[in-house]
Amino acid sequence: MRNLVLVLGDQLNADASALDGFDARRDALWMAEVAEESEQVWSGKPRIAVFLSAMRHYRDARRAEGQTVHYVELDEPANTGSLAGELERAARSLKPERLVVTEPGEWRVWRVLEDAAQRLGLPLEIRGDRHFYASIADFKEHTLGRKQLRLEFFYRELRRRERVLLDKHGEPEGGQWNFDHDNRGSFSKSGPSGLRSPAAFNPDATTRAVLALVERRFPKHPGKTDAFDWPVTPAEARRALEDFIKHRLADFGTYQDAMWTREPWLYHSRLSAAMNLKLLDPREVVNAAEAAYRAGRVSLASAEGFIRQILGWREYVRGIYWHFMPDYVERNALGAREALPAFYWNGETEMACLRDAITQTLELGYAHHIQRLMVTGLYSLLLGVDPRRVHEWYLAVYVDAVEWVELPNTLGMSQYGDGGVMASKPYAATGKYIQRMSNYCAGCRFDPAKSTGEDACPFTTLYWDFLMRHDRMLAANQRMALQVKNLARLGDKERAAIRARADEIRRNGGAPGAASQASLL
Ligand SMILES: Cc1cc2nc3c(=O)[nH]c(=O)nc-3n(C[C@H](O)[C@H](O)[C@H](O)COP(=O)(O)OP(=O)(O)OC[C@H]3O[C@@H](n4cnc5c(N)ncnc54)[C@H](O)[C@@H]3O)c2cc1C
Ligand code: SF4
Image (tube, rainbow, N blue to C red; front, side, top):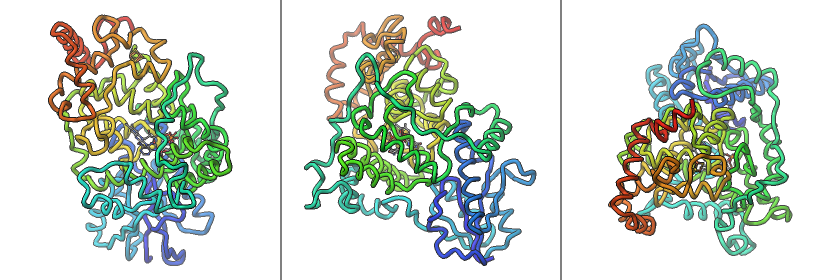
């Protein structure tokens, strides 16, 4: 055998660079399901199932095309359970001249493959990942000579280079790059109207076998498999895209930041897992959104707001990850040391917003951006949870979690652990933000306006406590000036009461007080 082409679980695009020059007579593909990838962090069942099902469908599609795929299933008796173990086992029996792979999406996996190749004495060719608009080198070049990195500049560069949403003079369509200020809507008291369920994909025989396997092998892992309806093939992913463009993109911009009890999808695309596993090319997604705008079917604000997430944020966070790893994962700029509250793993809390966001996360493997940033992320930030523990939770529970995208979003954007690389200031807010953007507070026994007292909203208590704990550092940040100034309005007595309640929440494992916990039982 000439090349053994390694295909990882998040590299399921048939046109990946690792397959360039593939010669079916001399080359073969290799894939392995290994328990280590589900146990490294305590992965949720929906996440494990999405990966395994999409991998098996990819295997079957390549075999149907006549390619040889050496595939190790999770429950094969000889499976060592580790990526390195399986690769070494395969290479020793197949004796390829060379290993070929597309750039992995995780630093750890990159190291594992390099080390395994070295032990085997085989050359390992790592090829660039064409799935992304920007290469790792493009991002490096963007950073040259810049004191501060910001999404906006990188996004504009890519829009110009890729000629996305430009007018005939090569300037941004509509005369501005960014329509973010139009994208802050919330729902009236009656809630979202006319919502349609997004395209759902009934598990086929392959997926059903995977769901049974996940329940058998990982029974104690968080989450459920009975609501599984994620796209797991390129054809399904394309149908999910069409459904989104047709039925939800028009309202995406306006309600991008809004939340509503037991409405997990609202106007979001739920395309992240399909893109991260590379069932769907981001160009196809961006082009479809631009075409909908050009055809007059959606507003510029909606199309731009959506495209910015993909051509902007998605590319930018990948750049940040590879630019700052491996030490990025160790960062903890706020010196946060608390444990992650136990209710993150079961959703059992009186706080209505957290209960809804976590329950939905565990059941579906999904929460939208503002639930991740301004509910679960905000609470752990204010409580002072060690960002590494927060990162492990996010990496475990979401179907779209791959480290290159999850880590900068969690440790950087939501926990400010990187000290301002991803976000210019911590995303700190009181419960009133959640009240404004959702109906959660209407069904909660706490009052978002209160920071002390038995019914004080824990977010609000912890917000003021957070400002007090970090006042010096925050005062040096101009963008936090107003928030820190408001702190001066608190009298000594109020400060002491807030501190006492925040301490009590911490002593109680991050939950609002033993008394109120007791009422749960
Ligand atoms: C703490 C935290 C952790 C996150 N972890 C992940 C993760 O593991 N994997 C992941 O794909 N996204 C992650 N995100 C980003 C974002 O929340 C998800 O991409 C989005 O919620 C996926 O749902 P959707 O496909 O319906 O997205 P939509 O709201 O419909 O957005 C469209 C697409 O834009 C992209 N996108 C949007 N926001 C971001 C962002 N901040 N970074 C990168 N891409 C973005 C995604 O590909 C998404 O599919 C995280 C955000 C936060 C705050
Ligand atoms: S009152 Fe506080 S805890 Fe309750 S839903 Fe609102 S923000 Fe969440």
